[in-house]
Amino acid sequence: MVNKILRLNSRDRNILMKAPIMASLGPQALNRMMDLASAVSFEGRDILFREGEAADVFYCVLSGYVRLYRLNKDGREADIRICGPGENFAECLLYLGPNYRYNAQAAEAVTLARFDLAKVRAAAEQDNDIARSIMQSLANHLLTVMDCVANDRLQTAPQRVAHYLLNNCPKESTSASIRLPFQKSLLAGKLGLAPEALSRAFSALRGAGVTVRGRLIQINDVNALRQI
Amino acid sequence: MVNKILRLNSRDRNILMKAPIMASLGPQALNRMMDLASAVSFEGRDILFREGEAADVFYCVLSGYVRLYRLNKDGREADIRICGPGENFAECLLYLGPNYRYNAQAAEAVTLARFDLAKVRAAAEQDNDIARSIMQSLANHLLTVMDCVANDRLQTAPQRVAHYLLNNCPKESTSASIRLPFQKSLLAGKLGLAPEALSRAFSALRGAGVTVRGRLIQINDVNALRQI
DNA sequence: AATATCGATTGATCGAAATCAAACCGCCAT
DNA sequence: ATGGCGGTTTGATTTCGATCAATCGATATT
Image (tube, rainbow over the protein chains, first blue to last red):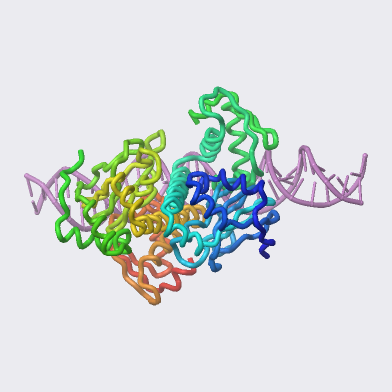
């Protein structure tokens, strides 16, 4: 099921070097990590791995979006995180048990950089730069997921959507227009909502000057959104 | 508001050395970290720090429980994590911005080990053992909080309670009795429930052989709980 | 022993979002 | 144009848990 694994082409190398986990490395550590990376791509809906499978690699997204999610015993799915270009996932397994702890699926066609867990672990032991970069990544993800718990527990659907929009429009602007980088159903999952609930949340925000047409979202009054 | 800061007494030293973040260190790194630790204690309800405050230390719980939580703009609170003996928190700030990202409150009288962020950061740069231990801690917390998101999104109140009970009774047993280590209201918050909802969830589990008296919980049939 | 206090429970009601079902809408292929 | 097709929207209903209010119970206080 794994698509063919290749050396990275020069375009992918450029993208990867800008990813946070690589960008903060010194030149030596960067080379070392780049040498460990291989490229792999998947079609939309492909499963990258499943919860419980033996974990040998972690990933960094080069293009497209990947959905990390869990299943309950009825087969219902809940997204834990949506990873876009520059984001890495499953790096937490560098220092945890031998199995993946959630499912990962390509939300659309994706290309990924692939890192052997054991090799990166060894590299981190020898190069503090790499260890520091991993710690930063882990700390960032931890905070992101904590935000997610707090948002789920404190905010209503329209508030979550408003929050998302505010985090994705330029700071210090009175109005903005945003193009969603993925389908609405994916955004719904990311926010812990059913697609219908997202749709209704957008309707509710019309009163606060939010206009939706396809993936295009117009925000007339950013400050009004902050009051939601 | 900070209680007096002291050297650790020998009892506290023993507890701290068994904490995961310390227990995985080699002898040299362990000494180094132990030298950085100081002791501090708080009364129940005391606020250790607030979201947005400048962060200079992280903590490891020696006794009691600490509540990490966020506020929404109406002042409603949502717990993000409950930390008990041996658990550390705010260590994610070693590699993040300069401010605390959530509030921390003593759920009861607590004693804590206190680590200067800058000093530990410096120690981690020099000692791979310490860096590895921090990465393990971050990875574990990340996974724990991811579990929390998934549970919130996938499970009903009785299921969350059943899940908690199963995680806190000996593996491979047909029946068990558990003593809650803290108030039910704290457990409610940890599970993302109002206290009333926790109470009702316990009632709902009576049918699955769960008996509650104060902090004492009897589980007649562990396997029945797994089916919830 | 009487009383104040705090946490837990129970009951009644409300509200938010999930679910189920149907309609809608661009988009592509024929 | 015609006809699907997948994603989105809208409507109706249901479910779950929050909230509000009252009671209960156990522990501390005097």
